[in-house]
Image (cartoon, rainbow, N blue to C red; front, side, top):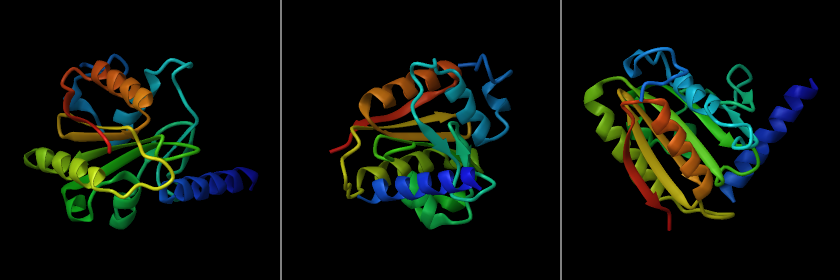
Length: 189
């Protein structure tokens, strides 16, 4: 019960702050990534202990919420996908899985999402939609510094937040997956 209460308070806090290569660890080719959570865990697991920050993953459901690591993000609530991770509701039909990693204290410090695109033909469209939607947001309680969008096969990864945290995430993602391609890297103004 205490764990659930702590997790619930962390989610409430996160919402309030948001409102105000070949992977050596993935055991195979980039095309063998089984789901968005595996992709995010591979990146997170490659961090050194001194690089990790207080984080949580998943959505706000009891079965998906994870303390200290990425978690699965349900895709049924398209408005929450948009609100939390920046995937526009109109693009939600193009994905069939998602995972997230968010800074525990402030979503504007770091928010990362990985999305499995149902059809490889839509990878560019999802990447473009994420970038446009995140860049057009009205930020409160502090601005994120930077946005990146990376593609890995039929996955799209986005992350926005503190420049140092985003640069570390970018470096780890690019090193973890041989086919990773940095599609966008832009300051948020």
